Amino acid sequence: CGVFGVFGVKDAASLTYYGLHALQHRGQEGAGIVTVDRDATFRRIKGGGLVTEVFGEGNLSTLKGDMAIGHVRYTTAGGGGIENVQPFLFRHNTGDFALAHNGNIVNSALLRIYLENKGSLFQSTSDSEILAHLIKKETKYHDRPRIYSIIDALNMIEGAFAFLIMTANRIYACRDKYGLRPLSIGRLGDGYVVSSETCAFDVLGAEFVRDVEPGEIVTIDSEGIRSRDFSQYKRCEMCSMEYIYFARPDSDIEGCNVHAYRKESGRLLFGEAPAEADIVVGVPDSSLSAAMGYAEASGLPYEMGLIKNKYIGRTFIQPSQELREKGVRMKLSAVRTIVKGKRVVLVDDSIVRGTTSRRIVTMLKEAGATEVHVRIASPPMTHPCFYGVDTSTRDELISARKEVDGVREEICADSLAFLSPGALLRAGNRKDLCMACFTGHYPTALYQSVDEVNKD
Ligand code: SF4
Image 1 (cartoon, rainbow, N blue to C red):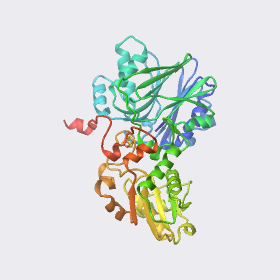
Image 2: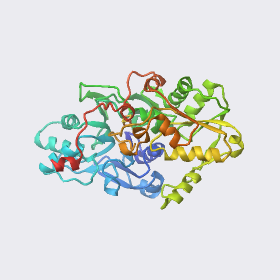
Image 3: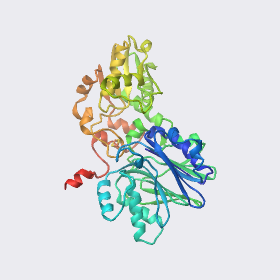
């Protein structure tokens, strides 16, 4: 998912629309914006689909105010459905507030049962709503500023999160203590913007100020920005998949440009796994930077051997296996005149189930490639993600079931190699990253699912 917020800038809804549009790659299943105007009236529009499908000039102009938060949804926890599209809006006798979340709360099943037993009524099945109920519960019991309720609530949840909470006069931007999800603050005119990725700042002409730190709450209001730590336990374990696959190449995450990171990972991949070949081809779009790095380091020409059709809709219906195969062909085509008679190094960002890799290798061979050497700019994915990235269950992950040579055979490649976890860190000059889907070392404790809790 992606979150975006605006404080203190005229027509905040339109700016949020452009911000969310720049974050569209982080979620295409739903979008929403909540604004608040000077007389503390909250207004919300949300719906299923792309930002451009949910919003138009007509409905955007009804969202009045110079404060707004917005969200683009990518379904993992809680499933689809309009009730799960954010931001959530909560009425409360101490003041209304809106909330948008990117990430996944791993102790949500236990907290939901605890809150329901205390009388909370949930609007959705999304785990993101849990924070709001914790804040409300904490506010109810104590006559004190809301920031303390937020601090207490944040300390009860475990997992990955970047939260934006908007009250009638301020926005709170919070990031989990492991720093798993990105969140950055920018300056726009006399106001501020907050975004999951910095690419949205460039679209608006905003100036990057700083990242929200792990375990930090940044308060943005008419007095400017103030910082508080909600936790003393702080780690810097940014999700490595943000760099590998998820984020846009023009974003900077914790000071490192995503394109530069991917390109360096490609260079390191060549160092670890060179191949005898004629050309280097990347799988569009997220693997192109790594392919460039591999080509540069190897001295082989970087070629556009695969073309992506950008106009395949999200709602494209693929009912049968046969049609699904055609769907991939419509999405991606091999450029026959480039690959014919060539030994190709195919650079991809990751292998999940292996089915897409097999189709691409086969497609290149059918177009006349004599050999296809697959190089993956990340380690074998052997474990599921519990932090909001849909990397499938363990049984579906091909590298959890097979050694590298077994995977190579299944995807019909002439050779196959993966980047090492050490190189993944070196590519971004980092000491730490979350690499749990490659190593199984999860930074947080893991909790039971609702089904498991109900069984006990
Ligand atoms: Fe990212 Fe993998 Fe960690 Fe999930 S487990 S947060 S996808 S690195």
